[in-house]
Length: 614
Image (cartoon, rainbow, N blue to C red):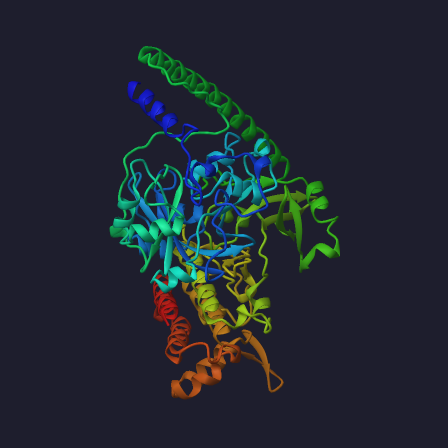
């Protein structure tokens, strides 16, 4: 108890209003959640401003592992970081658990959005007790801020409810031209810990005190920094797991929503009794809140079970996703309002509509068949590169599934956009291929039981606003367990041009059929052609054409004819050879001769790394 009181007193002393940060350093202003004081001018209390040499870049964050965010999977989901890159840079296996308070290096794509740099992710609110401050400073440990969350989302702080999906901008930045000329290639966002100094931080990450001070506008003659605020650390190379450490347990975060009046006094006993009173009050409040939470949780579960019973289908009880995931059951009337009564203006194609629900733009798919299996599967998976199911509805036998909205549509549509500048950049295609491979690797190896998608094609790969790919349409997916999936009673259910030979001939369903289909998608990314196209008035399969050209021919002579003309002059032939060889290895006629998705991911990571170096 005495230790708690001491920490409590130290905490408030540190945040005493008379102490203030330097002019260019955000300091404690990042802890304020008063939206009324917001300015239209860029402020470091929101995010880092767009003053870098490039509009986007790779950046790194430091996140301290703590339950439930203590594994590659949960941290990558929380931050929308690539799980394979996360595992690689931290020298950790995909299934290992980080020790408590272990620093984890999180690689992110940092982009300028309006006035600020940010790495975008999303967060599903688990309980009504959450508010913008706790999400920014407890969940994300200061890597986001109250003000940036309030600017990105339409909900007021008092209206945050369980199940709402928040847009979360993470603090990151790209090097300025001056920093680049001085050898800086990356910026790392570091959350200041108790006892940290600029000297300690700069020495640990092989940076100079002067460069750290200059990056943050700090005067070294008075280098005052505060816990729970962030510093940008300039790096000449990518950070290493050898530079990370395990922190000791720290005092709880301070909430600015609870006003505190603190007066200095020489009467130590008086101060101790005040501390004891505050401690007891906090314990009582926590106890009451816990009782209210569990009571409300039971009421919500009872209402949900009752509603699901009326809907003729029910959600799986053994969720394999983390506690912060939630599926909302919508009323049909809500979907009607969101889609303007399913008007043609809101139609995106086929039976998919766009609609705004609770202030968020979502995709609503109308389906005439029972969706039990698809809903069950989508609640068992939780990965950045697999489409996220947000809710569902049933109305007179017609089912509606509500998904996250993907701004750039399907990969098939995007490959037709010849006038798109990003279309002509090779690195985007490598990242898209890697995203698809990561999603399949997770589906094949990290779900229980493992699953086969069965319909991988460019139409079922969707792209968000940053051209990050997510696999969609799990209507044909099934368990990959041997006794369930060796034979399919109704085969040839899939998309022409992507189906593996053993599936067409024998109905054999294994993860290898997804690998074959991925090989076809990879060919589409390399060549810019569709999986099935017309040649000399006949319908031709892209995979058959490529295999015939590659078989027994000189790759160096033929390769230039295969690559998408939009990419010529923007990649080295060696990288093109490697990508083409990877696709051919996925298209092997015998399933056992194909690469595994783990091998595909590893190969693509090496290709991506070499492309970035070039």
